Image 1 (cartoon, rainbow, N blue to C red):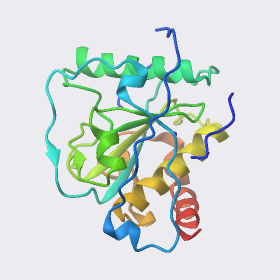
Image 2 (tube, helix red, strand yellow):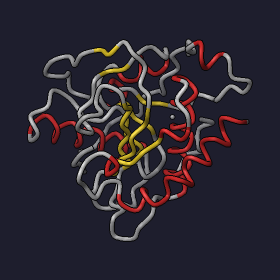
Image 3 (tube, rainbow, N blue to C red):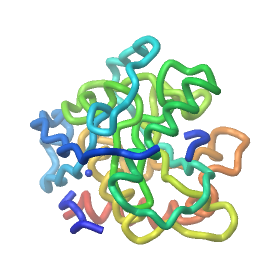
Image 4 (tube, rainbow, N blue to C red):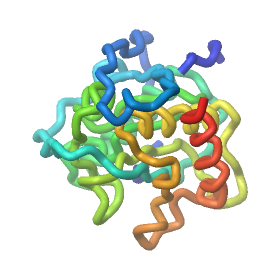
Length: 223
């Protein structure tokens, strides 16, 4: 796969003709982030426009208060060996189609998606702009009771049968969580799995590694 960028759900698994450029929107850090001694680098993100998202059926409410936690998910779809950016875009379109056409939601339910190749794509429209500007959040549809206060990230794959995320995906998850924590002033201790709030197997074996994830994110925040 290409050299890893410095730092770019529910239910999921068509072709692409080109590769879009990564989002490079300037970051306007929230005051709480600016007070930290160590600045966390921005991962490379690919916006809804980059992966060819459909327009949302309607715009979801903007929540002006900042999120206070991150919730980790897995898609529970087969663990594909295609770790390319093209497949990450394909996967994002499949997620959106399923969430809109089967679930009846207006858009993808999760805020962001992390591919098995470690590529980060925007899920629900507006989520990337809110994150990069550290200004509020878009209401999600990834975890009952948490959709107006928690950023949801889907990790493509099935991790409830013993498999673990590939190294690129795990590293990308750490980078993503660290950046979100930095932007919004969220403590690394406020990273959870879906099953912490709802009756579900999600995020599979990733849930057992949440202490490791929190520690790794804290190390990034500490510099």
